[in-house]
Image (cartoon, rainbow, N blue to C red):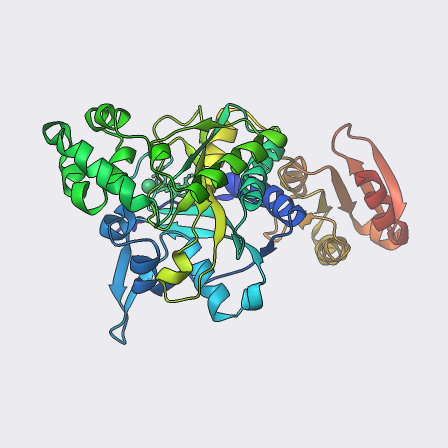
Length: 418
Ligand code: ATP
Ligand code: MG
């Protein structure tokens, strides 16, 4: 039987993985510049963390989670997103004790049982960045600026930041009622899912991608008319802050995001080059997530970038991923008597931090030289070189050769590779 990976997952192979390292390194540097520290968190958590933290009536919890019972009979879920785990970890480890804040980020796989298509997988990867324990609008501005900065550094073009306010538990119930009243007039136009959502989570209807529901949603009451003074002022401050930093944005009153825990600011960064799966980043404020998982009140704001999609866009836009790492030096043994010395020299080069390869399969000198074609230099070792304690160094770009003594070789190559 030929084994295949399950549907919706894929292998990130060497032709691609170096691009991933580039993207994650750029993002990591930007996040460090903004004061965020990396953490490594579990990939599975108690199911309850997500049902309570993300929300019972969300698509993620209702339809998309990989949930199973472990050998001890506990319900476990592969994380569909990272925010709930981040808050759980901060609470459990007292990172926000006595009113202090925590700026954390992580990278890793998330799991959602969705219909696989371009830019949508069942195992996908996020860079997730969270500022826990911060209430003011300046923090929302900072987090949107950071997300935008990552994309600036990666060179992505044709992006659009979209923002909205989804209110808070004080003003959302009022808006909810207004929405239910409105959508009840259009029951014949709504899809099955939206009809089902009508009483439970009418905000989610605003987010429906089906054209008929969208047309109805376009005419829905405006959330800005329902926002309480605090939420309204917060939203105004976010807009002013973004303008101060010169960050262009659009307002989309239908942007509600798929997770229940959002309060006040919600935002997405969309790419014009991704078709239907156009969000490369989604985030917002979630002042009540901690409360909902049994913790203290912990106002927070964060975002998650989809790395799979970022790479798709960068490839499509022909952007640079830096230089693909490859062996700088190939050590070739002229005959069998030199093979041992060739391996010793390769080891020395590697120990000095120079990427080096040599043949370990008894290949002919000719095929070794062919392999050396991928490197910048070939170090040729034969009986004469070994006797005279030298190496013949061949520059693969122009074919020129020089003889260098053993003890000068490493400094010489390091200098040439600068
Ligand atoms: P979408 O509307 O595309 O389903 P989402 O709102 O469910 O996105 P979030 O939960 O906000 O996505 O996750 C943040 C980011 O993670 C998204 O902007 C996207 O780039 C990426 N992402 C989400 N789901 C997937 C997936 N199934 N495959 C690949 N990337 C994904
Ligand atoms: Mg989704």
